[in-house]
Amino acid sequence: MRLLVIGDIVGRPGKRACAHVVPGLIRDGSIDCVIANAENVAAGSGLTPQMFAKLRHYGIDACTMGDHIYRRREVLPLLESSERIVRPANLPSKAVGQTLATVRAGNGMPVAVASLLGRMYMNVRVDCPFHAIDRVLNEVPDHVKIIVVDVHAEATSEKIALGWYLDGRVTAVVGTHTHVQTADERILPKGTAYTTDLGMTGPHDSVLGRHKERVIQNLLTGMPQQYTIADNDVRLCGVIIEADAETGRATHIERLCISVPADDASQEES
Image (cartoon, rainbow, N blue to C red; front, side, top):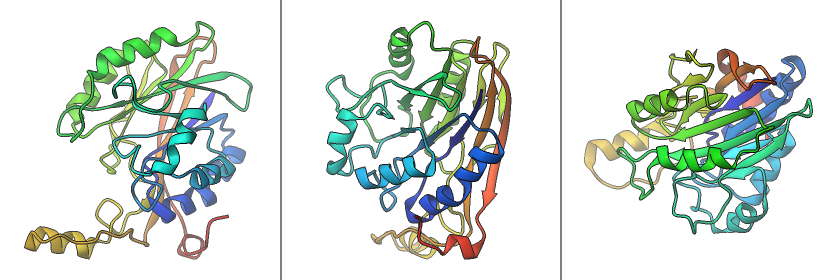
């Protein structure tokens, strides 16, 4: 089983990166399942049904979200109906959305996907992510061996702790939210693939995807600025994970950071 897991897709440049890179990776890299964090797709904050449909068209099988999950109200019916999007499992129990998604990979095997929000330095009120993932894993059918957990969190220590907590219980624990790719990808002792942050899929000539001049002006003056999505140095960031389909244990993890040529990055995504 080969999984492609993509870090935070930011705005139109992030969608363009997916449009130009993902189909080729699926074809040439024999990828069986693609999972992506989609909470920054809609102009940097949230997701819409139309944009979700585009991600599906590019070959993305399942989407995780984060603290911006409810920023676009038009996504609420999709969150209620789709089996391919998960909300963070440690949001309040009455929050809209599914806490577990199970999709069929290209090779016919089921893949379970879950998401968590961190509590450290995050401006959200959520339950304990450790207790929440225990509840979710109890719902995974015994025959589903491949399980991927996205930890959308600010603190590296919280992500690392969850990685160790879930080692041997899931196929992969991947971090998102900081938009900065880490170089600590590894297979933990009991067979779980881990990385602290997948990185950002979007414009890297920026501050976390926003035009850098406006962010710098805000930091210099303390005056509010309208942050807009940057355009240049577009890259797709994430990992490819290989796993034993019978046991669910990961056998290999490879970091990806693929630049989209400027002529491609300037085109409208299909």
